[in-house]
Image 1 (tube, helix red, strand yellow):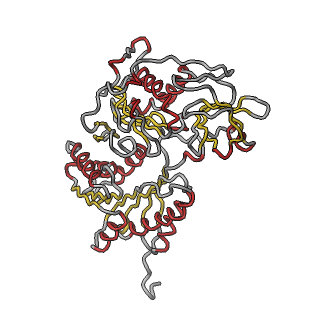
Image 2: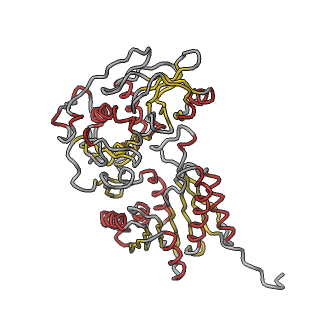
Image 3: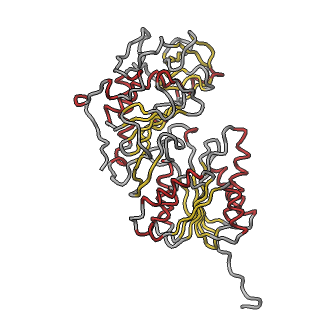
Length: 458
């Protein structure tokens, strides 16, 4: 049973010995100091005075509707040159409070909005309330007993723009997508300890965030507790997995596909399954547990496939997994699909879960062509009456455009796809504004063509 638990303030004991010895910035607890700006307070030590920000009328309207981003092009004036993480207070032309957010002077998203509407004091109590609300929204999943990994904080949609917190059993992983979080990181980690008492907290940095070695803010650093001795074990839908929370992609695993993996498990009985872009084998293991007779996992990364093998081995006590034949192939997904088709291989269920193809708006047309090409290649290895599961995690690609690409490629290949299901985000990845909707998937069956009537049949 997981030792992850809730902790009361009165029972919490945090001191210098609690923190990893190579993180001098976390040697003790700092008290927040308040600025003189009415209604707003600085949340963490090391943050300068508030930055007063004026924005365009359109940006002000968007903020008042709840949008969490203020772009640099929308900022018309600032009271001073703020540092990353300073609190930016947005005023309208009549000097009325509109919003408060984290200032990020080097980012196109200049202000990451924390709160809009009435003035608020952003102090430790404010952060605690917001974090506790995010954790409470995951309570049903955390109590399930069959799943010990989930997203505790989902960025802007939980009120923490450019930051996520994932849980893997007794380990919390904080991933920072903006240096604006560095001045507030200690407060956040201490509150995680207070609310959840994890054994350790690991920091991950997005590629766009420069590390700060002097303060111990480096990718993979353990901020609290002992560094993990190896992969962290966790459970998902009753199955056993491991995650490399220090070096693995994202925070160690792709938790957003949990529900879709359960769906694939329900479809796999008696089928041969091809898992393309298999990564660490989440879909592969679920398919095997669902009764697949054979699973073939394809990924470009040999290291990821090694983890896929390890995850399959972790579940050998599950009878269907033990009975399933598991093979892997390291290579480019497009090339591997073409090679499998040329070799005459056919599968009853093909899973296609690629990475994001649209890094910016200009790349959307290319992404749609890539989705269509994957559909065509997947159909080339799909058995008659087979099932296709295809997903997109590109936020810039709307669901309808993605589905049009899939169905359009099928039609050009002379195949009709009958949709079985459409899916989106799991509950721990909420959607609070349009750009937060990134995950969509479709399950479709290859329609059996109608039998031709014999000539002259009456």
